[in-house]
Length: 274
Picture: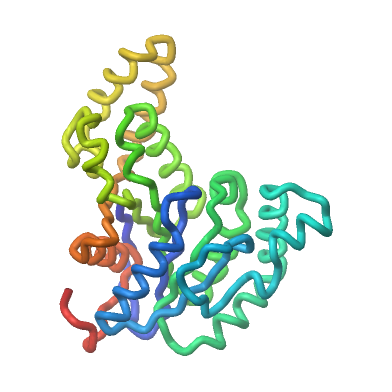
């Protein structure tokens, strides 16, 4: 899904993307693969890890929030659970945003990729990260949120509707140019037989009344609720998806183009055509 800026942006500004998505959607893998692809076409890239509990990074971050605060330390010191500790860390980062800004200023000029935590509550029920990114926007950073959703959520109508609602919620809460991505598209073949409609229906989010009929057939008592949810998604007309297969450079390039269009990135002359 793409929402773009209606203004001219100078090429010397700082651009970047915020990688969001629930656990298992492939955020760290995305950061690694996208950074590798961007470097291959000639773009300088820096990766910022904003997940204080990220123990499965496939990359070496240029800035790491775990140098400021760690989930496990908060759990031990404050006797909080994993989710409460993560929320504490995000609030701590917001209060100490000068640390992040200082670290960003130390980086050589580059395109930024922020690897964000996977707990959805941070983006649907909290303004911590949204406030931080808005502050960076005011400073001249041109950012785009990239919301990763696993492709298998298309396999059942109810899962897909919940995905649409979640994506819309995050878009409205983060308030930045936004691209929704169906990650792990290579797995479509495993559940292709379960799809009620063709792939374009799910990426373009076509007439949802057909999906609603399939849901109401299985869950008639929720018909009015489902209709209200579908109506809200359709009223905004904002949610569409890009397909991403990490092993298919064509899909990686399409996602890159969508993100560049959303945040107004102007290709440098030295970048190769892709």
